[in-house]
Length: 316
Ligand code: MN
Image 1 (spheres, rainbow, N blue to C red):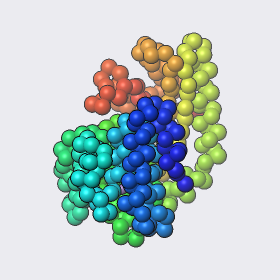
Image 2 (cartoon, rainbow, N blue to C red; image 1 turned 135 degrees about the vertical axis):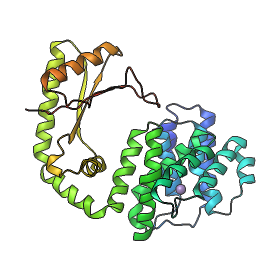
Image 3 (cartoon, rainbow, N blue to C red; image 1 turned 135 degrees about the horizontal axis):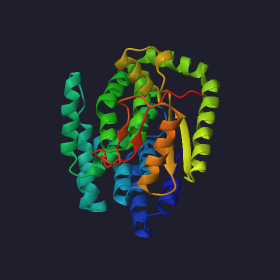
Image 4 (spheres, protein in one colour; image 1 turned 45 degrees about the vertical axis):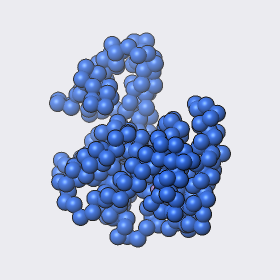
């Protein structure tokens, strides 16, 4: 179970002493107003704002964001008033908490699928300060991690909203791990049968795939050494929801999803030229699939993401 000391310990690695005091004060405030409340999981409610703050400190966000994480449900769910928060923590924190309270009151509701985009836009417009969305995303990550304790009806509702609104928002902000984690959790509740079927099929081939991943990594690494390119090769199975999306979009069966494994090369140097060298190594090893190469170095994504993508059929 997460504790405030864990959060303070991580925060002190990059934040000044004064900031730590504010975070601790927010913890005490949150603990006192949430006192006696329990979550559906039967745990004390305080666990939730602590976990949210824990996610934010792991993302190395500023003290105001972590403080807001600890306070984010106090107005909505307790007797605390925004004036008290302003008095105790100042205008900045009060306006962040007020923003979170406002956002938490709007839900996807019965909106049709094509209206999810409007909902996303509304959230963006309401979050004049980007930190409001970051806390909201951390909030959603923890709620999805603990979704099993909700009623089946709530589960489906929250999971659908997550898939249609919050995962795309995380993607837009370039926070890939949040997008992937939200999608994989939500997948289980929105497309339950498909989820368990896919898990079973992926599990069955796990050993085989692990060996394959290791082999491919070694081949790329060896080739890089030949050309004196220093860096790390990582290989991982694609996330469940990404596999499912691919099967659905392309109308194909599991056995036909050939790019099940993603490899990533991270070079030690920051020379763009070396990125293209590694790409040419991969293309020389395995024929690339036409139309699947993307140069996000020459043309970065809107969120400034820069890298090279390619798809190859690997024979090994
Ligand atoms: Mn919350």
